[in-house]
Amino acid sequence: MKTKKLILLSSLLLLLFTLSGYTKAITYEDSFSVSEAQNGLVVFATYDGHEDYGYNFITKGKDDEEHTLTFQKVEESVLKAFNLNSDDLVGAKFKITFNKEIKVTKDADGYEDEEEINTITNLEKA
Image 1: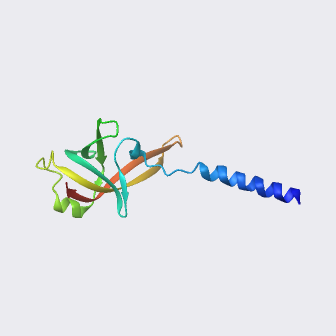
Image 2 (image 1 turned 90 degrees about the vertical axis):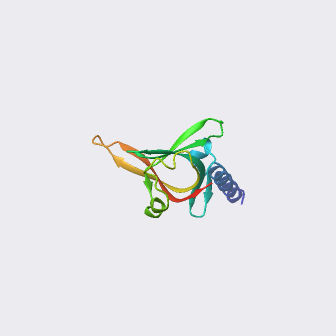
Image 3 (image 1 turned 180 degrees about the vertical axis):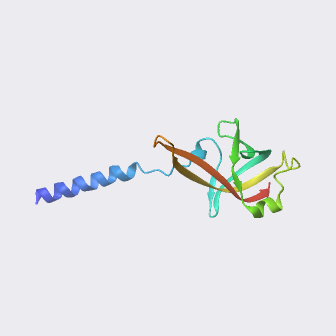
């Protein structure tokens, strides 16, 4: 009887320690005010222009410093509503809804390389 109680108690303690270490990590939360919405992540930022590698937005971080947030993809419906390829919107403030995807590839040596791909799914002037 004591053995069963000891096994049960040990199992419960193991479960408690396992679950207490669980956290949901969003890398942006450490730097930016990012919230989760039903349709993706949401951030408020100022448009800074388009480069070959993506669309840049400036946001103020929790450390009160400015940070650049780059979006590699933009849904076609967003580009139809807002011409982000011109300089006309540079300086405009937006509420950005986006998805974040981690793409893992292997290099020639077999090492894994992670690439973060941010896709704007909705854009609203703030």
